[in-house]
Length: 223
Ligand SMILES: Cc1cc2nc3c(=O)[nH]c(=O)nc-3n(C[C@H](O)[C@H](O)[C@H](O)COP(=O)(O)O)c2cc1C
Image 1: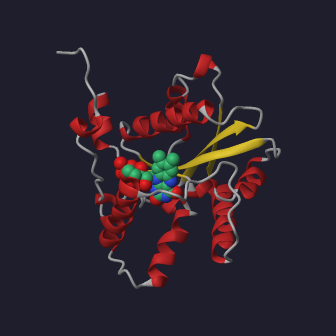
Image 2: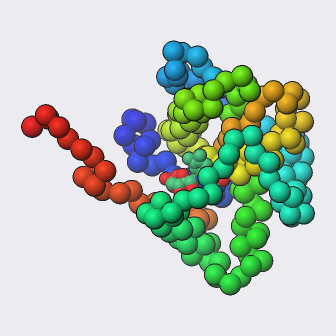
């Protein structure tokens, strides 16, 4: 698949088939994804893949924490102060997602179930974690880690797989560290769900909008 098609086809996949993902395919994707650029080639990322029984146990623990109302303690601050157009876009994404899922505004149970399903990676057979050492600066190093995450998403798309970049999977980092046998010095940046998309699920029809290029682009000296 060419890169334009992978970019056009990639969406956040929020429903997966049970079909397992071959380890060799995941390895191929990650081997390419780590070719992403980084500040001075510092390559601030580490990666982990969780599948099978380990994934079942980890996500059960994460879902229990959510259902118990445990306050999240992510390693990296989660934004919670969007305003203006940014808040509008954020709300629109949630609104369209709930509409596609057939969840009414006042259906608190269904909304909670949808929320809790995030902590299971939406049922994907495996999760990919992006990890950084605590000695790393959080600004450009997180930017670099984001490049790897997006490369993974595009490489997965080009192989018929789906992903969702998920901050939710990093909201409770302690069980993730326990699962991966990591010391507290290793910080959990983000998780991605990875698997074969369920083609029949309405939530996988969500194609989010983008602002028109001319509204966010400035040209100078290019005429
Ligand atoms: C850093 C980051 C964190 C995200 N976390 C979540 C998440 O926790 N749950 C979720 O359902 N989607 C999550 N997303 C997916 C975004 O909602 C999605 O990328 C956005 O709505 C644009 O839609 P698209 O990916 O289909 O183009 C995240 C995306 C990014 C880049």
